[in-house]
Image 1 (cartoon, rainbow, N blue to C red):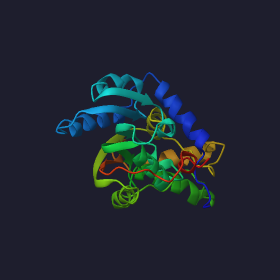
Image 2 (image 1 turned 90 degrees about the vertical axis):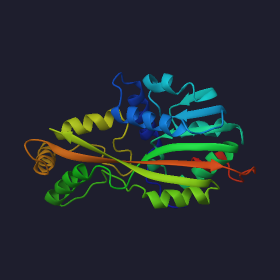
Image 3 (image 1 turned 180 degrees about the vertical axis):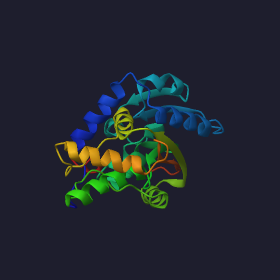
Image 4 (image 1 turned 45 degrees about the horizontal axis):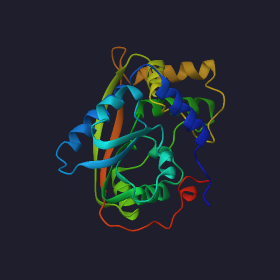
Length: 258
């Protein structure tokens, strides 16, 4: 088995804290707007839907997407679903931070009834370039590069994975969101609000030193102009269908690495 990259418990804690915050994550609002726009032209009526990773403050906007809509903090919730029991599965984030993504997608496919639809969004490979450059500068200065960011998926690779998992007609496209920050700390606060801080197993358990933080802040600011640094978040949206009936030979324990 390949070495694991991610700390599942840390990821779950971060997502739980983010979902419990009163602040409404702005990217989540943008994603829900996009989901509703994509569902609007779909002719069929969905019977049973599962939505994962959606902040509670936005759940009311999605309650009308199916006859029965359940919400869960993580895609782990599909482990308790029977095969072919869902008509719609919607996943907000998280998939870029899973060790067993191909198997997880295959399990998701097995939980969809024939004609079922999976709709989701995942951060793209070129997300947060200014932050990554600032952290790289800290590593160069100290001579030690810590595991503070993880590799992310490209749109073409995601489409391939969906096809390999048994999904039909996968459609993948990109929404590039330009953000402007006056400080690195404000960006970090936003990442916490979205449950998107470091969950790598090899991550440093201590934060940056005072000197390291100062260097990161200066390196981040140096990429901007007039006291404002532009940052980019790539949101990869995907839609795929479960056209054919059939059972998956994979078990939920395989998909979730347990």
